[in-house]
Image 1 (cartoon, rainbow, N blue to C red):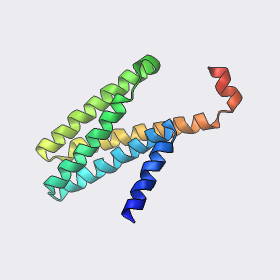
Image 2: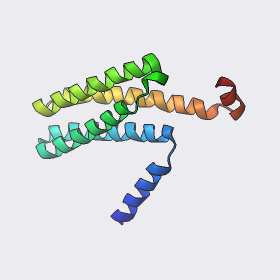
Image 3: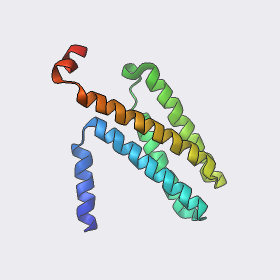
Length: 134
């Protein structure tokens, strides 16, 4: 059963639109931020390290996917936020402190909500409007 679910997840990621992949990355980051907080609270140090590592991997992927030529100032601001989150997650990992992770979780939720809205707006545009904007 687990093997089938893993194959399903891989297929859903490979066939998803860029917007859906972005949202999936944020969902994963939020999930691992929450897991990291719980592991610190429960003093589950090895599990905390794994969850923070996965969170950092996702944040780094989000950062690496930025296109500064297209995104301009927004892209540079996102890069600053992602770098801040990496610093916060490192601090949380070293000090077994949930506060930096809670900061990241708040940022991730805010960014996720913004992207959900932006993706929704893109989907509302008719094909003729999309071509007119370009």
